[in-house]
Image: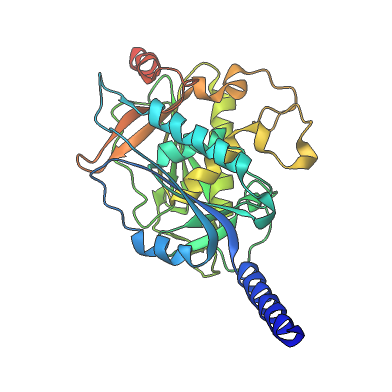
Length: 326
């Protein structure tokens, strides 16, 4: 009996250690966030199946988006708020000790808006199912510029136009960086990317050093700095934002937009996000009252205003300000 009991105990111990080693080899919870139109194909089913073998838990959060404009505006406030609330609830109940990763499969403006409201634990990772697929630490974004050997620099390039109001910030960080013409004139435009002779170049965002690659943390930080600079300059004029970037870069740039997501060392700063201590510019304090995100319509090849958050001003009001200044 003693020998049989010892054998059972040994088997249980070996099984426990085997399970512990399996846990050690896996990451924690992966939150797969999908906010796309129903007709948009899911290109990432294979990647998600692979991720199921690498993470302890998969938490899918999905809502369909109606991207057909009503009165000239795409209104997705309800589904964005729904996923935002569910993400907050599940994060609160999660075991933070095992780690958190987020894989956004979201329209760029929606990823930007959703992340600006998210509160993620320190050490959270972003998993990009793009081509190439890569993962990186969200905490890498927003840090002071550092030398990253083997990666391209991202440079904001500003141009002046004949419009009397409006600032346009475009993030051009993919193999298709160009943007369709905007349906309105603006005063200035800043293109964030690898720009030569005023033309955005095709680039690959990746965590692998290569002469043609841009690091995602550098891309997200540069984009956020350009948006924040535009808001500080804008005063009462709208800031139009468009992008052709990987999904994790959209998510990280939106996350950086909120001063609440600063690193602990600057938690007590009075800088609202524009880089100036004590700034009282309303656009810096309340960016979503001045941001005018545009969504790229793949079918028509045009940019359309999109309403993402409850605190965002009705895009039609901002469009009216721009049109009045033409």
